[in-house]
Amino acid sequence: MYNILTLNKIASCGLSKLGDNYAIGDNIANPDGVIVRSASMHEMEMPETLKAIARAGAGTNNIPVEACAEKGIVVFNTPGANANAVKELVICALLLASRDIIGGAKWAETLKSEGDAVGKLVEKGKSQFAGNEIKGKTLGVIGLGAIGVMVANAAKSLGMDVLGYDPYISVDAAWSLSRSIVHVNDIKEIFAKSDFITIHVPLNDSTKNTVDEKAISIMKDGVKILNFSRNGLCDNAALIKALEEGKVSSYVTDFPSADMIGVKNVICLPHLGASTEESEDNCAILAANEIKDFLENGNILNSVNFPNCSAPREFPVRICLTHKNVQGILSKISNSVAEKGLNIENLINKSKGDFAYTIVDLKDTTDDLEDTLKAIDGIITVRTIK
Image (cartoon, rainbow, N blue to C red; front, top):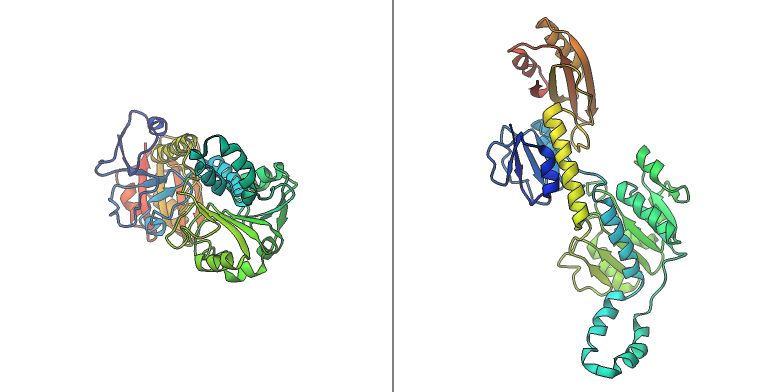
């Protein structure tokens, strides 16, 4: 029996994937796994029993990822599960930034008491909300992950010219990207040539304030900027100044902040990107499948702090080890197994930065093998699955 703690409301279609061998709830003691959406875990004391955390979503800023790695706790996310929902909202934002749809709708509401005069008043007043079409304009997409690729392809299908920038684009993303998208190697080219710029990268030290005063100075006059990725990717002070000067004509963000709310030509949406029934279902299903496969088979897919590492179960015993990525540790693992008179049937090792993960398949084991492996310098956790 495995114990799963849920820190947010998780769609039942996802939790049902875990099966009868799981106790699931928001008050579970000694959890083997945690499934979370937006709840912050930074102040949470991680129980000794905790082996994995699955984030039902792409961002993991609410999880102490590095601290978890040091304890051998594998952190998963669900890349792509909410990509279509975010893509659709970004396309909506392109239109909101081009035409004053929200302002027009609010103005139309003021005409409620005008009776038969509404029609004439509409025709007379609509010009103040006129805008531009997106067809033929250039969209710069910063970050070509699951969402960025879908946005780029959709914008191209709507008649936009699309530039894409991502120095770390994956093979899968490259295959998914329309061949008509121009892939640029310098982010300055995005800044200089785009009528619209949309940013789709994680927030970290290298991406914080990607859109800052220097970047804005390179941009076209009247550029429109969209942020549906993370707060902190744009320098708000620089944006407000550029909006006041007219350098930036509109800014649409899914991450409201006190300094941005109410600023002219800024549209703040209440983090609606992944807030669809379909997205929540997709994220919950993928998160449940990831944590189930890890707990039952030791396989890792879509981890943010340990490498992807998986193999089919073909032998009765599987030893799963989280450890530091240091020289000589594999030979120590192999020697420890051999010293117990056991033969390794299959061994897979993958690394990611300072950490690594190893799967060892055996036909049998001994009562003291786990303790022997735990004594190896650099080993963090050892788990036997039978």
